[in-house]
Image 1 (cartoon, helix red, strand yellow):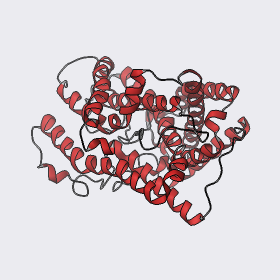
Image 2 (tube, one colour):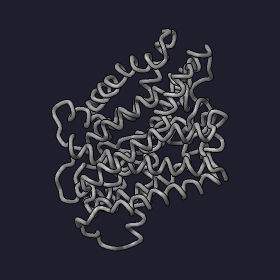
Image 3 (cartoon, helix red, strand yellow):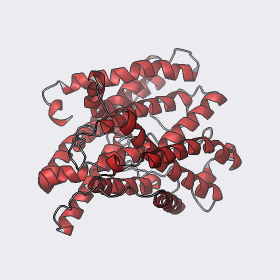
Image 4 (spheres, helix red, strand yellow):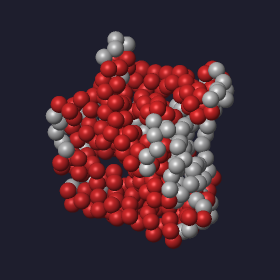
Amino acid sequence: MSTQSVSIERKAQPMAPEAHVAPTQSSAGPRLLFIDNMRVMLTIQVVLFHLLIIYAGTGGWLYKEGREDFATGALGAWLITVSQAYFMGLFLLISAYFVPGSYDRKSAGRFLLDRMIRLGIPMAIYSWLFSPLLVVLVQRVTEGTSQPWWHYLPGLKYEAVIGSGPLWFVETLLIFSVVYVGWRLVSSCPAPSSVDTRFPGNGVIALFALLLGIVSFLVRLWRPIGWNFSPLNLQFPFFAQYIALFVVGLIAYRRNWFLGLPETTGRLWLAIGIVMIFLFWPLVLGGGMDKGVEPFAGGWHWQAFAYALWESFTCLGMCIGLIYLFRRNVNRQGKLAKFLSSNAYTAYIIHGVVITIMALAVRDVMVYPLLKWALVALVAVPLCFGLSHLIRKLPYPDRVL
């Protein structure tokens, strides 16, 4: 957890779109192009997120330039903290939405095998090959020396046994999928029928957000923000949100909530999400975060409780609001959107390598940090998707990615 500027951070952890793990179809059958487009948007947001950590200095990443001024640090802290409040939960929500249908079509054995191939193989390759090599590269460039790459293999000097770097999300999704299979097998019930039901009312959503904030606060009494279960690279202080939204995604599929979301509800919660984004500043300034983030991270502090509530209402507002916004305005695809959608998952997997190498390549270029972030992003985002396209054309990766 970074204590720089005014942000509460995860350590180098945002997300993966799982773009080809399940077809984006609703329980009623039609392909949900707006979900494909949301995955693309979130994947790009992840690339920008990690680049901002490199150049704004707020948060954890393998390489950071540490050249921030006050404006860069404050803006970076705001953008990073706001993103963290909702985008991982949204990824899990939309990923879970397609899990029941995939399981129904494939049965337990085929479903698990598919998950092991599409999630487990990329996670293992990144954790056991690319992550150690990146550590070596960064140390050689920044310090002029390093140990041989095998010294940084998972479980040795490099702590995470699996799921290192951004691949923690792939690991989480695999774990949740295995638990779902276990629940389906233990319950021994036939697949529940899919029926359109009324989307939850605003009062129910608000109560859910309140309870989610309370549970997050209680968890952080035990494990404050910044605590990491290093063998699996999982930060449990955020898992109340992740588990809750994954379960909501499973329920939403059976009840066809993504298509049944009323426009009035979508507009209201989008507005709530936007308001909460700007309420970040009164919260952190009023809570004295400029003197330290510890009261916000956890424990019996009003700041920790307020932060947990802010996070949960921001999350629900942005999740519902973006689903509404994309369904209403971006439920179509041209050639570019199809290209980006097809390559989003692989782009996520490789983006950590791409942006770290790019940042090292231009580390001696002295440019204002925020401007440098924008300039590198203009190259990094297309490069991630372009390399993804080339990788997926290879004979073996195309079976996984």
